[in-house]
Every structure is written in structure tokens, then in C-alpha cells.
Image 1 (cartoon, rainbow, N blue to C red):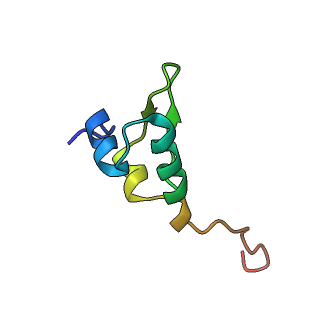
Image 2 (cartoon, rainbow, N blue to C red; image 1 turned 135 degrees about the vertical axis):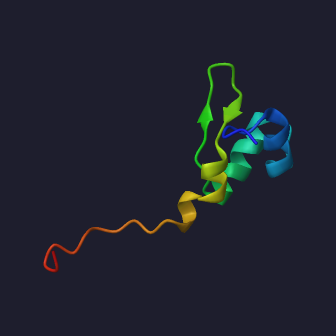
Length: 65
């Protein structure tokens, strides 16, 4: 398995063929991706398996440091 999803894998993951629909699915799932100059979408298996929506971003508690 390649680290970067193939176009077929991206279709399988999103259930969509068109880039605009793929973006909506990825955005909804909190999955990071890039849009190439040719309009195609690229993402990695790491981003699929670790979406941003599950990450907790918070400021460090400097009083405890």
C-alpha cells in the first residue's frame, strides 16, 4: 500500500468521482488534503487514519509546566 492514496483509493474512500464532491466528503470527515494545480486531490493514509476532527487542540497549561 502506498502512503499517498491512488485516485481509485480516493474514490473508494469518498464514494465520489468528482473532486468537488471528494472535497466535501473529506472536509466533513476532517481529513487533510491538498488540491493540485490540475484540480486533483491528494491525501495520505496517515491523514485518513488520523483525521483532524479527532485531534484535540488546546493551549498548554503553563502553570503546570
